[in-house]
Image (cartoon, rainbow, N blue to C red):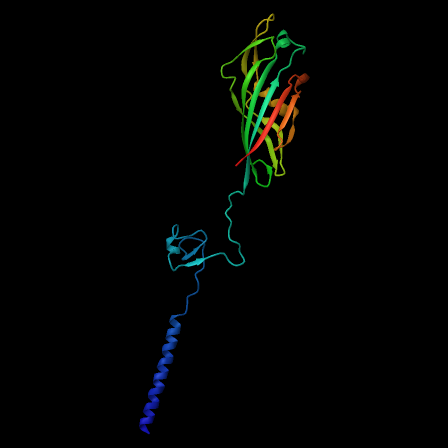
Length: 257
């Protein structure tokens, strides 16, 4: 009887020890609450833009990596959205047709011809709208007298001179239309020209060639709308006082990839 009691006591003690040991092991394996991100490097959470390169202390192997929550969208980099870029080329041929206009003897024969070339690069939102930037120049490529009446000498640097050339607004429609809105800004620089028109006496005249080329927009074409796949051409557009500036204008637009 005594031996049975001792055996039963031993079995109970072994069972109790095993139970207590299991409890201890269970407590050791309980995970600590997940660390909360503070959106900074050093918070022991690898999230957002953090990686092993820019934040190794948070993103070493075995660290917690957090992605967007289920009810949140992944952040999208804001690079300003897509855009379209176009090159706008314009050839402007303007004449000062002063023959027959009342005035001095010099005006009777003063008929310069000015040829200019405009090039503008403009960037638009890919869905259309006003240009987010435009940068252009106008260059005087030729200046001479009209007809057999006069010869002209021009100041050094006049032909080939360039001025910045910017519309107040250029808008583009993905359907294919582009609109130009005056005013046009440019540098209004004067040059000296020397005219000889026999039998009249030789005269020196101050010339503003950029004005006589840009004036077709600022004084005549306050707005201009074109289909970019067709280009634009107008012949002998008259503008200015007494319509003394007949002007030819050609525009070509091409997309820059």
